[in-house]
Length: 135
Length: 406
Image (tube, rainbow over all chains, first blue to last red; front, top):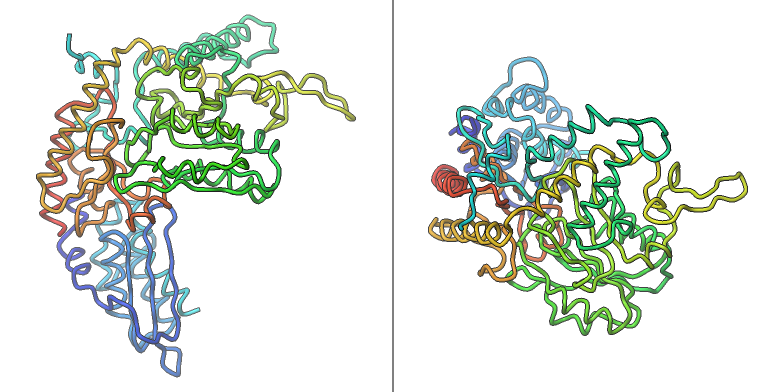
């Protein structure tokens, strides 16, 4: 049932809007579109001297799942480099059932997406955009 | 006598389906319509009593298959009001447009212009962009009015002596707006341009009389017109089909093959290379026969009453915004809307939990979404078998989404 998909934790993540908006002078930016559904994520990052994220801005034109994922990602991104982001991506992949193992917070909230295969890309799109921004 | 929706519904087995304890409220007909028993029976009869390849076999099954395939061509032709030999079966509506873009397009030269509109489905944009890359033709675009119609007041400026073809959606797959064919044809004829209509959203709503429209090409899809997937139709004036080179090469489309020279079969065979979608065409023929027998005056009035119910219901929901024509005039039963603060996919996903199937997103019409700066819309598309219970379930679901997701 969809009501189980849109659980309070996912809605709360989306409404938290962590990192929402543009950065004034980003080190790098990247935009990713999902051509199937039209979701669009733009990520700005400001990096420190070691390639770690000092500041992040995320803009989502997309569904609640994509908004929640971008917000969750932005909430834990600061201080991580590309490798660190790749590591937390496993949490999102585990949460939606694409990888075995237990997902850590905040991504464990996406467990209900496991039963909605067509919506899993919505959760992963912000990771794709951030990966591009850090590459 | 009023339109008997119950009798129509009985002919569609899938409407009895129960998912998660709820009946199916299928309002995604613009993407794919459901299939009546008459079509299922026709396909099954072919597969169980006549399955063979068409045209060249001399055995009894091949003769039955060929007869069924050609009878389907006659049924489609009757539905469109044209002779059977002007009907080309294709793999779908998109394939039909690509066929015209390739074959008719090969008769055009660099600098010739093709006029499209801002509300076209991608399948009536991209094939022309590919032609532009191949041959240097130019594309022009008719903008869309605030209420989601092709703005034909701009036609005189956009149609020039260089315009060779105007290709438009007969009915918009996003707004349901019906194009004023007479105005388009008049403008086209003033410069000797051809007119193609993409009938994907119009054909499922009743028989046509193509000669009276004055157009040159018409295309539609089987699966949106209560037929099977994997089949579509191109109709073109015979002199155009005759002048057009083949799209695909292979068996059936030839006159004589040598390693030096190959000659082409006459239309429609010239455009039906290889084994055609036989069972699908037979199913589509049955769908056209089924549509031709329906009371469309009653069905259309019924469909538009449901559109009014959708519009009235949505207008009573705080934050719901209708998109497209405000009235029922010159439109078909497609309604797009937005719910403020809720993405269309989330609306559609919520509706699914109420058993309501709709489409959400850009509807393969990204230029139109850009025109209105929209992420997408939620689209309700109605068929004659829909009833008030479908609309009421839709409205209940939208109210729920508005309450829970904002």
